[in-house]
Length: 308
Length: 308
Image 1 (cartoon, each protein chain N blue to C red):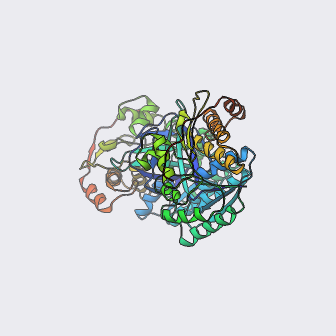
Image 2: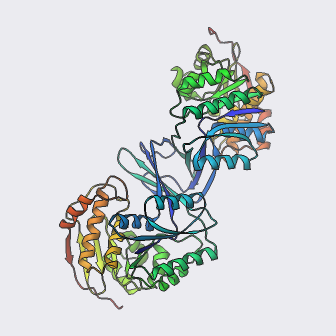
Image 3: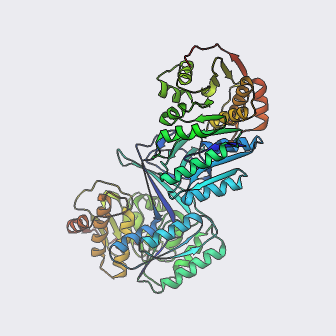
């Protein structure tokens, strides 16, 4: 079982509109809704790849119930820790003409001390049975990032972290097996515009491996004493929403199955490209995935110096 | 009791954001939510003016429950006709810097034939006891506007209609006591850019009186054989959201109390201006209302010719 830990899940609402005009009144043509948050999205992809998953998340209120019911309907294993607060919504307006997405992210609820403790205890408990544990997304706004370090340190499973800012920084101290920043997150945290230098800096701060997602340029991985660049064989046009979650899902699957790094990276690049190519955000096309897998260009670039 | 009829109520969600950027990711700073739809907004204003109100609306699903609970919490009399569909949401993103509002309006549910019949029966029944009946906003998307004409014809109460397009057109055939279009709605339906010519055209099509709201220029009223222009004494800056609902509320109150037209129009202009001046959309300031009332400039303009 792969555990996906989502401290701040969301009820994702997608509006299809003509185009987004500030100050305008938009007639919504179609509405789509489902449980979201990065950890939930990663679990969906792992589930469609055939993996057994467990979504662990604190949730409450009307949206908490909707999240729980949708996870059940989607066939995803889940344990929702009930909270008094109302879980957040996200609203994404997608323009029909060019596919441009405009996002509104609600801040989400605060968690009581006991609620966070119950969530953490659940994660530690199930983490001990997991082949890999995925820690994704933001923390509830009142949770000290140090509590996150403590949680990560207690989970005895190979771990992958997809977070940014203070949350990512706190996670590094727990020496996670893999962190997956994108180029902006890497630059924000390290001050390095060069992804290779940024990745090496995160290794120095505690990460055992860093996989940086570089959009259409694929992935850059620093795995301790080796570094790789993995690039899609074909340029893909489409909707990049969810491409990062696909990278995380593929890396988590490779971590759970003890696959070698070149295999993990090929899978991650192919799955991410197949997600961009799919018409629905966050889904991927199986045929496209197989075709992309055969075409990934993988290169060992050099063994970077660091003081680990 | 004043009955407000809202065939397509909404759960109104307001997001406070920095500014709206198409294609951007917006962190929502604060979320406000409440029951909405024009008829509900009119009922709120009438309630705060001290009138006894009854909100009649078909609603269902998660948002239907939220609408019902919020009406109860707000102290508004209501009768929610349950439906199988999910009531719609509206999302308004208000920019903190300049107050500009960007709206996303969901289409709302279809109604079953029996559901519409139950709603119509309720409106007819309670309309017979009402001192005025307000018909506001859009119809459910599968309801034939002719059903709306039939409903209006059966309600034995002085009636005011605030609608646009086909819905307004169908309402005219039932000879409502007052219709309240804005300048755009009037131009859309009649092809007349001149509000006076447009108002006369609506009288010819069946309305007994027309009050056109002209934004900061106040109101133009054609009441059969007399016409008035009512203009605020002070120019007001602020949020125009809800100003039209305030006009309707004041006109409904005047209709219920058999006030003469000059009195109704002064009240409507003052309440509308006090709504624009209030910091919260759709609310009004009592002091501002009294001050505006003393300052309204009312002018009888001429007796327009029409063939009624």
